[in-house]
Length: 326
Image (cartoon, rainbow, N blue to C red):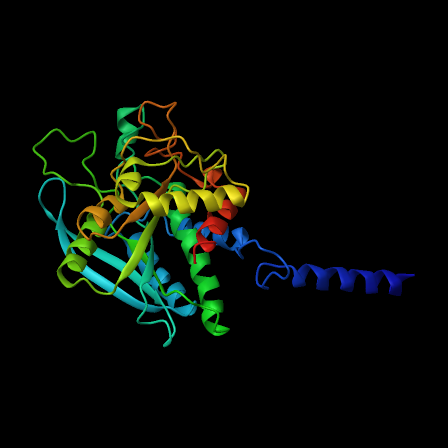
C-alpha cells in the first residue's frame, strides 16, 4: 500500500512539473505567462529597499536588473545621462535597455515595452506632514511593472532559444520617473519634472531615429487586487489604434472588467514623452481610480505601497495581455 501511495505521489509531482510555469503550455490559445515568477521579481526588488535614484538600493537594483535581462537572453544597453530635476539641479539617469531579437529579426520594426524602476523619494500623499519625508516603498508604483516585464523577458528568451521569436522587442526600465516636484516644496520649480528617464531616452531617440518601433507599451502600477486600467487620454490621442487593439485582446482573454472602456484624464507618465518627443505611438496601462481626489489609489505615494498591494491574479492578467501582443 505504501509503494502504491509513493507511485501516486511521484505521478502527481510529475504532473505538476508538466504544467508548471517553466513549461510551454500545450493545446491552449492563452499566452504563456507565469505570475508566480513576476511576483518573485517584485519581492526581490523590495528586498533592496526603496529604489530612490542614486541610493545604494537603487544601484543594487539596477545591477540586478541588468543581470536578469542578460540571463533571459537580452542584449543589454545602459543609457547614462543627466536631466534637471524640479529645482534645476542635474540628476544622474540610468536607463536600462534589453534588446530581444535574433539575427533574422534584428532589422525588423520593434515593439517597445517599458516601466520605471525608481521609487519616489517622498511619501507626499501621507496625511501626517512628518510622514511625507519617508521614501515610498514602491511595490506597486515601480516594482509591479518591472516584475511583469522581467517575466516577459524570460518568455522572450525562451522564444529566442526555440527560434519562435518573430518580432524584436526592446524592454526599457526607465529611471527617475517619480522625481516630480514634492508637495512639501514651495520654491521655484521648472516644468516637466516627472519622467526624467523617459525624457532623456526620447530626446536621444528623436536625434537618431533608430531603431524603428511599431509602437510602445508602458506598465505602471499594474499589480493591485482591485486594479482598473481605463483608456488613458494621451494614449487615445497618440496611439488610439494600438490602445484599442490591446483592450480588445484583454476582453477576449476575459479581462474586460479590468481593462475598462471608461476614459481617464490625461496622465503624465513615461508614455507621454515617448509619444510627444520620440514620435512613437505609445500606450499607458496604469491603475486609475476616479473615486479618489488624486485619481490614484489610496496607497499611492504613501508608506503603504507594499506587497499587500500586489495580486498574482492581476499580474497574470496584465502579463497575458502583454504577451498576446508579441
